[in-house]
Image (cartoon, rainbow, N blue to C red):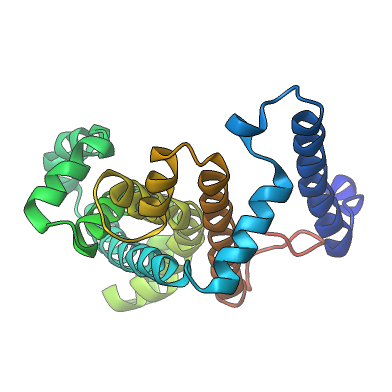
Length: 266
């Protein structure tokens, strides 16, 4: 394992390789549409998609819709994460509560979120809160199950030794449970970011008057494939940026965890 880790390329080389994959994807897309193998009407062209995206940002037309989607994403992410952490710790530390509510948690998690979207729209209207609620249902369970597992992973021997040394419940939470769960929390946050935006966009797509999901739906309604792919590109860019921000926050908080040689977390 150690020798394999030492053979990994440096971080700049990894970034160049990732960029190479992206460029290769656009080149293949361009060749397939330029040669007629794929119809530009149904698949667009990379040049047209990039030009549309640039024009939308330059004209400012997309900023309002992007702001709405990012606000919904942020609210869903924060609310879902806080609730997931709180309930995850509670259920892990209260076995009776966990046993009683276990079937209900699994049943609710199994519900298709698309089914919930119109219900939230009926309850909360077509404003941002129906989209936030949908995003919360996605984020909550991801964080909840990871925190629950992280707390459960704490070694009974470590707990017994800490109690022998006179650790209080607060000390156990701060020095034993929290470090154990923190790695699991941040692992879930990388996934939760994407799901928070998925919840916002799906909610906008099914019923809204603003947001990137609304714009994608409008473009799809007039067979504007370039507009659809442009909206998807913007979503992808900002999910990557938000995930990078989570990674920046994660590194100093998990400084005690062993890192690979190029500093990557995943």
